Image 1 (cartoon, rainbow, N blue to C red):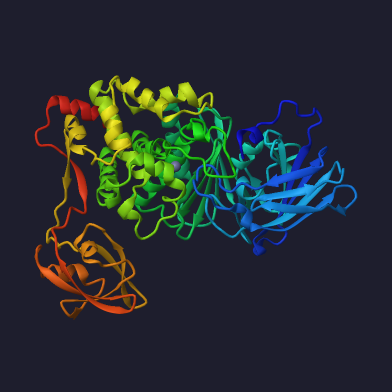
Image 2 (cartoon, rainbow, N blue to C red):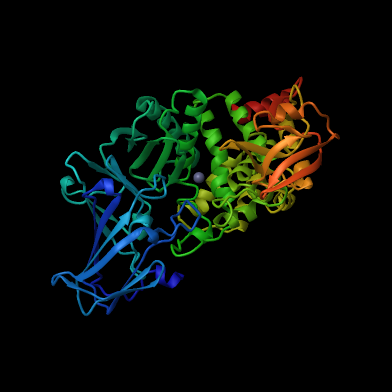
Length: 591
Ligand SMILES: [Zn+2]
């Protein structure tokens, strides 16, 4: 879809059509939403309907149209079927035969429980607009009504969209298609909690059972809202909804302007580290209501729902948000600076143990999100780095850089505020250059080297150099009994020891071990995945062992020369005898 088709033509007739969707689910256990679209006052000979192929916030073409079935269309008042044809995978074209009122009916199969898809079963219905509704090219700016028909009288409807008419009609209105896509619906017997923060109404809706304590979650969420509001200077919405799905093992969040959808394992709220991880998820999705929902890269200023929207700035949209999801709970008093530094150390460990960090820059990772981050395979860690992870760590370095140059009187917070004031409030898209200009103006220095090396390049991040002024340093944690390095991960599957990952530059990688190989023996003796690291301790770096493997059913014996293992854990620790200046800097950063 080009820009011309996303913008409503200025010569649109004053009698623009009205659009009204009805969503029923008479047999929720069938996983089928029954959708009806009423178009009234249509005046053209054809009606084009297109379904988005992706949804903002999740940068992968998901082909939502594949779940559409039993498409049917008739002229509204005559119950006369109208001819239609498909012109592409997501494009239906109807010949209207001069009908002014047109009714389109279709079913959508909804059995994928994630924050970015649809899920309907006997316990609830949940949907995202992009995965359920068509848009009409040229009429995206038209308001759209949605009426929900719950299957049972005790099922309630919760959505960030404003209701119209009597509450019992379950009718809501989106001011345009973008808003409809940005407004998830939860339908069922979920628990609903109302609370107020800074004078504005908020809701927490919880579907599913588990060990979540809503009172505690709400109390901590209130603190997060206050801290983030303070950072940006107020809350840019009238009402906000947190929608929480408690599931068996899911994890995820999807941000919206006035709501977020969260998916978290149902029994992960008691253990402290898991609870903290949940509050980080809340802080992350809430932070997005500014960064990426309103403050957007140029490429996402107007969404093209029909194809990939490329930007090199996702490291800022997602990575900087990830840095703040670690910082915000600290500022909110949910955890202390020790837990914060432990969390940061874990992220550094993840980066430093991913070989792909030396091959792919974080701007390239951002651009290729559509084909790489969401489409991982066994080679991914060898050739790519997550823009979430590296974006988080370059944001951390930028924060330290700015704080150090300005004695903690400036920080990355000022970059966020400046970007918000220049672009976010107005929803004007920013370019990579705008972003760099804002960071350089707050830092008050030229950052060419930083961008060349760490954003657009693949140089190792110089953690120690940036930590030193704060009296901190990074150490690689030594194993008590070091394991000579082989460089592969093996797991037991159906009684077989299968190689799941090989570091391409490691002894195993160089020797030719492949992902999918079945490991049999070391020096002729059988070995299991569980025994592997213990058995390697019988050797020293530099020793050559014979690995017995099945490679595509061929029995191989490969000589592998063991190496010295790189650290598999890093930790940020205090330097000995920090100076007063270092202590001051640290206190200014972490409080
Ligand atoms: Zn995010």
